Length: 155
Image (cartoon, rainbow, N blue to C red; front, side, top):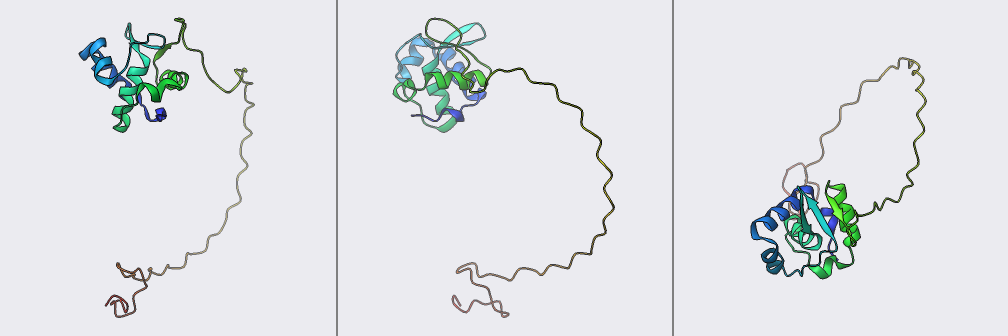
């Protein structure tokens, strides 16, 4: 299965731009997708095949196209990722895809104002001891070099 979390909005827009340039039939044929129509992305008043756009956007993100088989079991996940990236996604039956949030949508209670912080007592600081420079290390064997600066092991 393809890693879809790497998709950015820009990757999806690049795939949509190529979709528009090639036309739907050519775009689907070039990348080996069959028109399915159940899941779609709505962008600027046009509808695009979700698996094909996600597969090609994956290519822009990772260098490898996500095939129809890679995406088949992850259409709901892909829809959620695209919604987070600001796209409208339609699921089978023509309805907008439902949110897949794991948190309950409970209203948040207002926060109480914070109490002002008490003034901290002044502290005295000791002067920091000067740090020693790290010992030189041989770039070949990573042993500490002797005072001569020439590694005893590597010569």
